[in-house]
Each structure stands twice: as structure tokens, then as C-alpha cells.
Length: 610
Image (cartoon, rainbow, N blue to C red; front, side):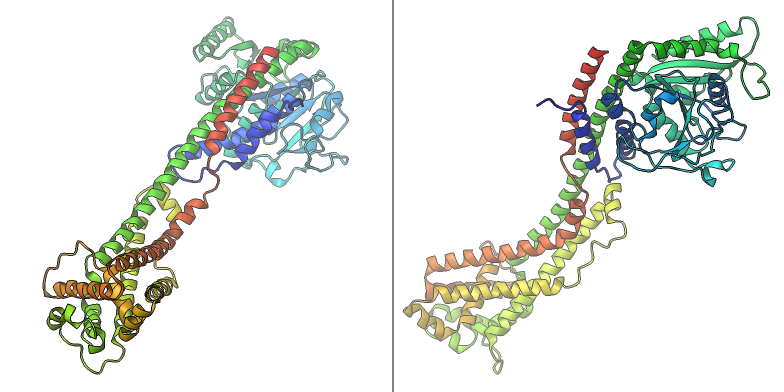
């Protein structure tokens, strides 16, 4: 099956639509602008031109404020078709002048689909067709590509003097004096005081097959036009230049023309034609003398008559535009990679903070911290009760004597010890998770991208319900330990010993063993007591279940505890990671780089055709 000519462009457009560059890293704002420009250029010029290589050549007339673009356009068609004046910006809404026979090419959304169409009033080609007058048979609305464009009637924003709002419509003016096969588009000033109009002017220039740049004898060296001219040169757009308002003195035209050509050559801008228009009096209708524009008019007539020449210009500009899009694709891909790298850096910072929290929890479990204070007191209650040491007293009597008997009258000491262990572990988890969140939040807020994500959020705050979530998880683990003890003590002999001591008491002993690190070195009386109680628990379990079984039970209990602790800490890191996951699609850089290669290949094919 033959591939559609625009398939490469369609794929590129789809990938551009998914590009997400939200983080404020270096160049991100510029890259977002490149995405917008590339999408508009595809829709405004590249796709419609590739689909309709025989469509009229679009000549966009652009230049600086007050260069006389509209006056020049009016002179070419012999009537006031484009408004001009002293108020800046002078051209507020772009005007597209076309031969009546070419009207179907422009009434729909084939090019510049984002601009609604407005039809100038009066008979096509007749006198009195004035800018801004909308006929009663204005173009019917619709937004289907290739179909009618939406109607827009001029509103107060576009008509008010000194308007600074960018135009949202394109005025169509059918003019018999515009030769068939050409269309002239009078664009807003490229250095307009209105930022929206400046961007619109550049958008229209990106839609041009040929750019007619209008400047004046005293402004042709201005910086802004040369910046735009360089962009045109990079895209290999065909550029013709009009130098307007040249003083009518001997030798001035030649001198200025020579200087301008040298400047163009220094900037690497290949201009095919340079037209010189002298400063002269306008007639009562504001028209230039016909002789001043005769050369330009003849040039357009000859171009309109040369279908092959128009085709070569259209293909050359199209190939340049597509090659330019390939360059943009690579630059956007580079910025997409920068975004991905920044996302990964922020993710690594958050994970490192919570990995540290998780490690500190393990340290607290293994360094005897949980076997002090209330936990130690409750454990001593357990090991100091007579029923606990029935049958194993000879093994632990010396340790029991050092620890001391439990205070009499306390009910269910094993349950109290279990609760004390659970409470201590809950506190450790919450405290260390909070420290992890504070560190992650601080590291994020140290960079612009992190501050952007953390803006308006208190990521270090303990979420509502997290304390209960931790308590529930720890109680569940303690239930796992008791079930492990029951399961291991299922045979008759072991079961008898287990029942004589109590499942809870033996379960607490296993919890103590899990919390006691094999590398534990006691320092101080209280810690030493904690170490001794861990030894008591170990000996007790080995007496009941055997050494191998105790090692297996301790390993399983540690693994289950570790799994639950991992989940608790991971849940606390969730708000940070969720913000990163919400940033959107990943992997767009690879797609865009593949698009760039395909676009380069397409541009080369079109150049060969040209």
C-alpha cells in the first residue's frame, strides 16, 4: 500500500501533541515556543502545501512598522484593499488578496486554519471594497479541514485605534488585478508594539511560499527585520526585497541598493530580486504613481504566468520548511531529554530521602533502641513471671536473677510487652518517615523545578490517617508472628510446651529476637539488660522449637516486617512520586529524533523534485 505523502508530517504532529515540557529548566520556555511554532507551521503551510502543490503561491508581504506595506499592496491592486495609517500598529488584521478564480483555495481551512475568514464587502475587483466591511453573504462557519472556515465579524478590539490585541481573523479580498496563481497577504508589523501581532506576523511568514520583505531607506539596517530575515534564510525561504521611500536624488538608489545587497550577502541571505521605490507624493486616493511599482507588478505577472517557476519556488520553500522542522524536532527532543533528566533527578532525591528513612528504621530495630524504656520494663515483666520459666528455669536462671522479678499484680504481662513493642515501632516509623519527607521537601525546594512541583503544597506534613495506617500494619505484623508461632508449634510435643508458656509470651520472645541485632554490643546498664533479655528470648525459643527452627522463624518474621515497613515508607513517598508521574508522557525524545530523520528524508525528496 502506498504511504500517504503527509504520513511523516501526521506522525510528527501526533508526537508534538504529546510533548510535555512543564518543568522550569534552562530553555524550557523557548522549547515550548518551538512546539507551538512547529504545530502551527505544519497546519498553516507544510501539510496543505504538500497536499496541494498546484495551489496558488502565497506571497506574504512583511516588514517593519510604517514601512509602507499596505500602501504598496493597495498600489498593486489599484484600490484601498488594506488599511494603513499613522496609528500603530497600522495593520491590525491580515488581509489576503486573491484572484476571484482562486477563491476556493482560501475560503476553507486549507491554510491558516486558526484564523476565521472575513470577506471584504463590494464586488470582487471593484472600487470601494473596504477593509473591515463584511458582506451579508459572509463565509459560513465550520472547522473541518478543507471546509469553510468560521465567520468572524470585526469587533471593537480590531477596529479600535491603538488596538493591542492580536487579530483572530483573516480578511479575504477578491481582486481581479491580482494575477491568477498568486495571492498576496498583507501581514502585521514584525516589530509591532503589540506582542500578539508580532507573533502573528511570524506565524504568517512561516506560512509563506515567498516572502516579500518591505523596508525603507532609513530603516533597512534595523535589528528586528534582520533577525527575521536570518530565520527565512535558515528555512531556505525565497525572499524578495522592496526598499521603499528612497530619496529621489541622483545616485542615492544605487548607493543604498549596493549597501543593502552587501548586508544581505554578509548575513548569508540570498535575495533573488531587489525592488526600489522612490519617495513620492501619493494621489488623492493614497496611491503610489504606477511607474514606481511597475517593475514589481511585472515580476508578479511573469511569476503567475510561469507555472513551473511557481512550483519550484513552492517546493524549495516547502523542503526548507520541512528541514527546519527536522531541526526543531531535534532541539525539542533535546529539551525533552533535559526534562526527563530533571524528573529523574527529583525522583532520585525523593527516593534517597525515604531510603535513608527506611535505613534508619532498620538501625533502630537492630541497635537495641526498641528494647529500652517501656519495652524493657514490660519484657522484664514477662521473663520475671514464674509461669514463663517453667521447664526452662535451669537455662535462664542467672539471667532472670540479674533482670529481676516482674512487679506483682500486673495482668497479662506478655500482652503489655507486645503492645509496648508495637507502640515503640510505630513511633520509630512515623518519626523517621517524617524526617524523610522533610529532607525530600527541602531538597526539592532548593531547585526551580522542585519548587515548581512543591508550590502550594506541604509535602512534609504527615498525612491524615497515616498514624493509624502504621499502627494497623504493625498490629498485622504482630499477628503474623503469633500465627508463625502457632504454626511452628503444631506438633504434639512442641504444642504442649507452647501452651504451657502461652502463645503471646513466646511470640513476644520472637519479636525481641527479630529486633535484636546479632552485632549488638551492649553499653550501659539499661542496654546491657536489653541485650540479656534478647539472649533469654533466643534461648527460650531454641528450647521450645530447636535452633534451626528459630533461625527460620526469625528470618520469616524479619522478611514480613521488612515488607510491611517497605510499604509504609513507600506510601509516605507517594505524594512526591505522584507529582512526578502526573507530569505526563515519557519517551517523546526518541520519537522526535526518529521524526527528525524522517523529515530530513522527506525534505531531500522534495528538493530532488524541485
